[in-house]
Amino acid sequence: MENAKTLYIIVPCYNEEECLPETAPVFVRKLKELEEAGLAGPGSRVLFVDDGSKDATWTLIRQYHEEFAPYCAGLRLIPNGGHQKAVMAGIQEALEKADVSISIDVDLQDDIGAMNEMMTKYLAGAELVCGVRAARATDTFLKRFTAEAYYKLMNLFGARLIYNHADYRLMSREAMRRLCLYHDENLFLRGMITRLGLPAETVSYDRTERVAGESKYTLKKMLKLAKDGFTCGKMKPKAEPRPLDKRIAEILE
Image 1 (cartoon, rainbow, N blue to C red):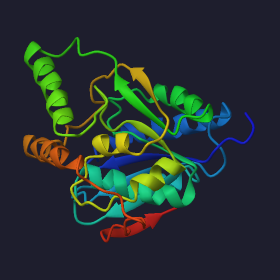
Image 2 (image 1 turned 30 degrees about the vertical axis):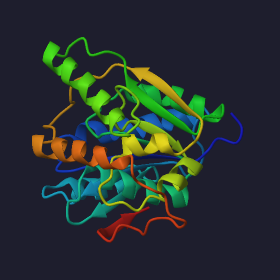
Image 3 (image 1 turned 135 degrees about the vertical axis):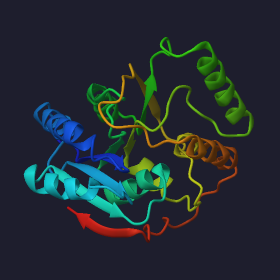
């Protein structure tokens, strides 16, 4: 495909020394496949964002930067600031170097194969493509009930959410630029992206079990994210992009 765009796959990481050896090669292999299919162009990278990890996460990212050159980039943040800020820092880095980004969690519970359809829809004109969980058949009745109640409550408070969408999404450069006009510290990205006023599509996929390690999303963190969701409907964009994260300690390009 002619005029393939530079893609940055943004992968936030926090204490993922168990998971990275399993998933980092998978991300790099997928990026190469996208290039071979004409869906990603020169300069594309997997950008691992270390959000203040206390284990060997950054050591591994530095290793992969050398081992998988030039496909692996890294961004080190100190101290830990939370998943949403790590994704935003990755977006700000990608905005300077890429035409398009895809954010995805390091554990590969989200189907990496959906990236092909995301990029196809982007090249067809979509500025935002959101990964949507196909079903909750494996969830308990209580979990399904609370999830539905959560989305209804968030929409009631002005956070216009896409049902069953978390943070697996493609953003064009214009979408990233508009998102970076929001300077708020309490980020709730899944509620903010619906306020950008750009053509959006969805891609359905099946969610699987974590490849390795344990989820770092504690109940406390989930409650804080929900709290931030209540305020995102009131956020207003600024005229200039948000300043770079002051926690940036090292960049591997």
